[in-house]
Amino acid sequence: MGDRESERLHSTEELGEPVPRDPKEGREPHSMELLEGKMEGIPGPETVSTKLQKIAELAGKAPEMAFTSLNHHINIDWLLEAYRRTRKDKAPGIDGQTAKEYEKNLLENLNNLLERFKSGMYKAPPVKRVYIPKGDGSKTRPIGIPTFEDKILQRAVTMVLGAIFEKDFLDCSYGYRPKRSAHQAIQRLWEQLMEMGGGFVLELDIQKFFDTLDHSQLRSFLDQRVRDGVIRRTIDKWLKAGVMEEGALWRLEIGTPQGGVISPILANLYLHEVLDLWFHRDVLPRLKDTAVLIRFADDAVLVFASESDAKRVMEVLPKRFGRYGLALHPQKTKLVDFKRPSNGGSSGPGSFDLLGFTHFWGKSRKGRWAVKRRTAKDRFARALKKVSEWCMKQRHLPVGDQYRSLCRKLAGHNQYYGITGNYYALERFYRSVRMVWRKWLDRRSQKAKMSWDRYNRLLDMYRLPKPRVVHSVYARSETMV
Image (cartoon, rainbow, N blue to C red; front, side):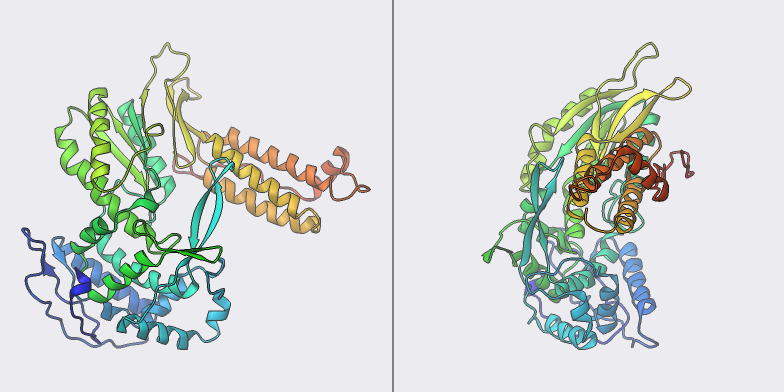
């Protein structure tokens, strides 16, 4: 365990040589010898980028090595870059400190943070728990808001972990990784389904994944690559920090830091070991036919060419996840017959949802069967509800201000949901937003009613952005007017 190891502080730019893993005990056989070198040049993102590249290169060359000395890379320049990468527009944590307030004495604050981090005196503050809508908005789910300073340190440590584990993660994983996105996952899934002629789709739904992740298992996964004592002790502090809700502090024995910057990479590491590696190393060689896995964070689907393969894997999955303290939702985890319909068929088989889209078989313009996607019903309802609530609360703002905000909301909706084949849902959302806006403008006062004639004249002046397909399966952006 990294928290049992003694640490020395180093003023080097070069990486330490990683320690080989003991295949029998997983223990560190030798201490790490450091390559000497002193950092030179102007501090800034380029210097940090060079360090990250060197860490990544060494991690790639030594996939069976565990790093015992990494914290010396996190210096004031590293924290400045972590600060630059941290979003400044989010709500403050339990201390109430905003990014603007922290920035007033930035260097002093960061130097103080660095000293506490290196000396082990840093105390991870609890996260502030708030609730946001879930699904269609009828239910809520909890999220955590860390303090701004905590976000900076989490970002700094995440940068180190990312340089190492990005060399280990597999291509089937798309969530919260550099140069990867939900749209790439959806595109890859579409390509595989079209190539395979569909198949049997196993939808995975992990119950409360981020809340039930087992700390001891996570530590064992981290041991394989990262044994730096300073970094590991800090991660342990985040895992034990707990949450603050209505003045009450709740200490958690399981789960990742809610809302934490470091949570996505810890979650990816966990499912990399539990699902991704297991599927490719142990499952695929035992299957009769083709199968693929597509995962975005804790959202995943497995596509099988053979129904018997799919049923065998579905039978063992609960045991596999249970071994690591996770549970699959018994109703939401299901097997869907998604084979391409026969040429004489009039409708496709089942459908399934992934990343806000419903996937189904439909006819192309040439009359051929093709996998199509549309905005999932719950996502559509939730997005429209949010716009309606905003229009209600902001109906007394000047019309021009409302218009500019609605333009941004529609553009953001098009940016995510604007994929090939989804134009009808985009058009429906656009028309629904126009209806909602008129409804609340009509209720600004008892005197100033918004008749349809008046509203149409207003729309001539304030033209809302029309639906737009941004992500095309034909690798080109297209606008439909």
